[in-house]
Amino acid sequence: MSARLLNKRILLIVGGGIAAYKTPELVRQLVKEGADVQCLLSKSGSEFVTALTLASVSGNKVYQNLFDLTDETEMGHIQLSRNADLVLVAPATADLMAKMAQGFANDLASTALLATDKQVMIAPAMNVRMWLHDATQRNLETLKNDGIRIIDPNEGDMACGETGPGRMAEPVEIMEGVAAALMPQGSLKGLKALVTAGPTHEPIDPVRYIANRSSGKQGYAIAEALAALGAETLLVSGPVNLPDPEGVRVVRVETGRDMAAACDDALPSHIAVMTAAVADWRTTNTAKDKIKKQTDNSPPTLELTQNPDILADLTRHTHRPDLIVGFAAETDKVMKHAREKFARKGCDWLMANNVSPESGVMGGDFNTIHFLTQTSEESWEMLSKHDVAHRLAGKIAEYFSKTHPEQEVE
Ligand code: C5P
Image (cartoon, rainbow, N blue to C red; front, side, top):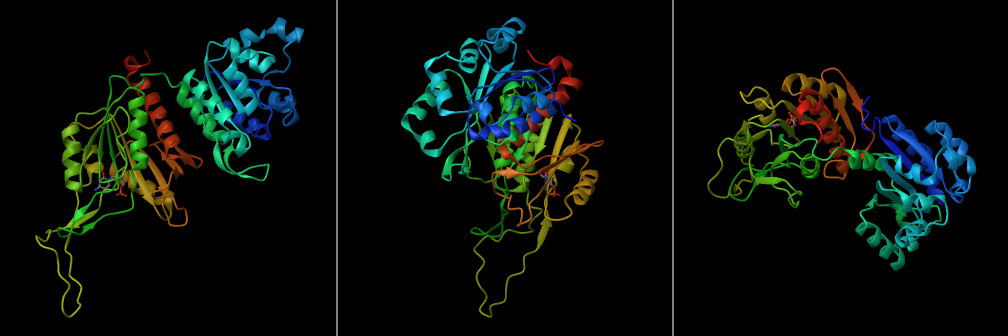
């Protein structure tokens, strides 16, 4: 089991909105990652979820009242807010956001938020009109400028019957946000990372090429997440429609052979994450001129040659990276094919996902990953590609903190 939040204390402030019903699951997710969660239940929050439920899932006392003498003697509100590594507000209602933006301190939640000296993260949830209202958007800007991290609400059907942005992010998304925020800055500092992404284009003639549906989104997100943890990151990208990720050096290529050469140039590297959907075949000879239709309508014959397998070659390279992560996009029997591929490729970890048309993930924003190592197997819940990237980057940081302890946290 991964435990990215081991020894981390989270103070969860539960605001008064219907989304509060998701907070026991949020607590469960945080606890599963090793966090010690203290809950502070607002009066209106207690209309939607009980203190008993939160105490049961967190295993800790739930704080409710600003003027509770027992609480004040056991742990005052100031100490409560400072004992945490991170203060999380979920759901953050329009009212609570307004109070935070203005610096009100007239109940336990707002007082703790004003008294804290720790990172604060909010997961807003409210009716779509309230969310889009100028006042809320103004408050949101103020909070962002104050350095508060925001887990944006999702779009969708709301309890009030309207549709649009305002639904609180799902517990797993909030937990991933917390885990990313608490990753020690610079935990991959001093390490080099190579990431491949996107499809390759294998020319048939000057106007046509062989390609695939890879969007590059997952690889771009991974490169950004590794760079955010301090790795010196090079992204070798096939043709995609994405801006360069922040803090990453990007080399753009067209063909599998160009990608292989760019990867070779990038060695030595400590980390390699190969997400590119490199075309398996290229035409043996690229026609110099556009291939014309035949008068008898007979189709041309394309002779194909296998492209270099960049991942497999990397695993046998004299400058083999310390940690090589491969991807396996499968449309059927995902685990069986992934295990076979894992054995064949010689990488250290494999991220397998289902890209069958029914699952609709190729090119989409979400991924359902089966994470394989030589000795273990984890099935991740469906996550945004951004969250997959941060989870993987966290695992990579954890791996290097064990194998290269001197690289650990500043
Ligand atoms: O064999 P398959 O294409 O399914 O393997 C997928 C994994 O291998 C991915 O990590 C992909 O980036 C990598 N790969 C590669 N070079 C190829 C084919 C795949 O690096 N020519």
